[in-house]
Length: 184
Length: 242
Image (cartoon, rainbow over all chains, first blue to last red; front, side, top):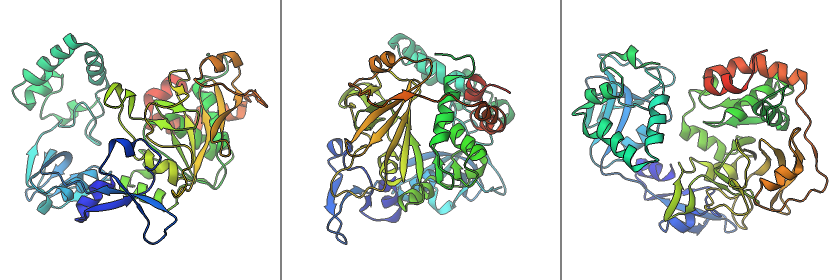
């Protein structure tokens, strides 16, 4: 999070609380420890900026100018701000006028390179206000991931065979374009 | 394990509630049904002045994760709750890998902020859905967040207690260690010892006080109604109707 925020702020790094004493310091050689220059008694970790060359995220709505309404955690907005190249938003619906509520994050169109209309695009996870997590599918995924044979079958059925996203939604038992049918 | 009067989850929710002090600023993170039930029960029972934020519920939906983390870093959270795939004697938690990091047996989701929150919340209550020698270990395979202090590192708070389906342990800061405090009714000390990956001192231990009828009544009425919205499957399964 600190890395993404540094990227979004156009800074090379940010100091981050915690982390010292954890195993992060063994696996992340790029995390540096400095003495707090304003308080020499304190050691603090520096986390380098994350600046993806491209990013893709799923959101609720976009309008025709590429303005996007996304999830409340704001990671999508941070991601869009930190990305140096194309930013692609897949959205549940494209509308003439956005309908923000208190929970939505507004991502201005100048941060977004392209919008793709992809209802059901968060499947099998949830998209608030549109559909819940597909718990049955997640269970199937978990069971398949335990056994190489079943995993191959899972990939064939849901990844390789569907030629586009609507075929994927058909394969998982969800029908494209009918938002109500995506609910559980 | 199953008691006639209450489920083990109901007991754990009650034990979490009892840890909460009136007036505290309490945050409950995602995927935490037991702390959510416990915090809501405290609010209904003995802590009406809690400043409570349950992530994902109606009352905190507008808080973004960055705002939430920032607030914790500023010291605006007195109490938080964490769990782990492994927790060890020194209250280190592991949410990263089981086995060696470079070739793990199981890869887990990661810390999701716990590397900071554990240090920056006023105190943290740990909870575990299962208690076995596999997840309560002498030393975790990977320290996602450290339980014990490190010289020169700013730390606002420490682990407070660990609540499991079998017992309650209390974190002792001097010893930098989780110490067995009480064994839940229906569980034997032998069972707790066998299911814990380090030798436990039994000095001064007691039997956990069972939920009172008052606590259970609140849990199964007002708390249950709130829980049904946020954790419908958990609630249907573990919190009974009055």
